[in-house]
Length: 100
Image 1 (tube, rainbow, N blue to C red):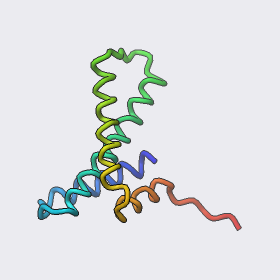
Image 2: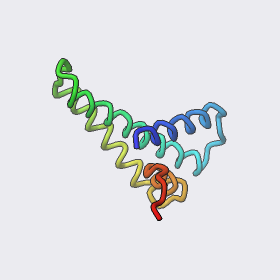
Image 3: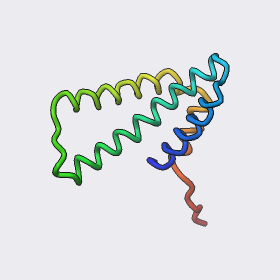
Image 4: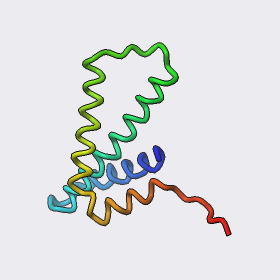
């Protein structure tokens, strides 16, 4: 799921570099980018918390991460019914061979 999110974020970053015309599609892409970026960040922080015993956590840092997740949920809520968001969600499942 992390690699799918990284791929989606990279695709969106490339799209944003082309300076697309403002409009509903761009807004959707910005929300999708927020959600993908947050997933990547939170996954990295979870790995740090699980495996890097040298990391010191404090309230301010944790609140920052909570804010990131909150923004991601708000972005997802805004676009969850959009076809591009649904396609992105399905892409998180990855490509697995079908058993016969």
